[in-house]
Image 1 (cartoon, rainbow, N blue to C red):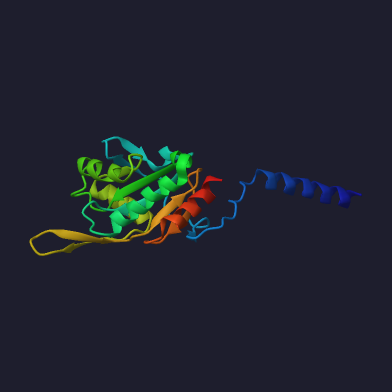
Image 2: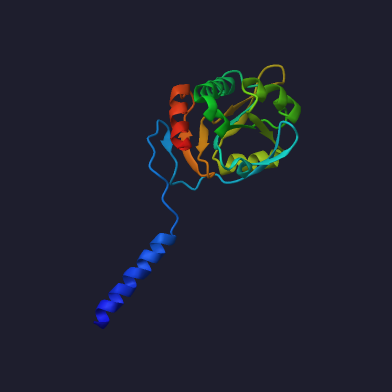
Length: 196
């Protein structure tokens, strides 16, 4: 009888501990790469294109698409921003539950004023983010983003940089990596998965 009571006590303790454990993230039907089990990234604080301090966590409750780029980018950045603008149209009323964030990898040129003239052009709800070179380096490092200046004739430069984007669920957890050139239909599908 004592052995039975001990087993019953252990079972009750196990059930209680299991009930207190955080629920596992639901399995998603994704086109992008599932990042649910990674420890990449984290919260950060930068300045938005209106000069206001913003944290990633400020957008909790929304699905967040995080993209790193720069305003002088000739192809990758405008292409990606246009895809996300198309996504917002495809989402209809659900677009208000999504936040696209554009973090510059070129803070030297991408001031708040420059970002204000660029980022909202794609969609007025999009937010451009900048900061000091040290702040940008810290965020890039947290998200394993590579960016390097490349000199061009005449003293100017371009920036070679990682071209994918990240999707976070409504609780602020990183869930999906979307490769560059992922079409709007695929992005929309994955965002809808996170909106459920």
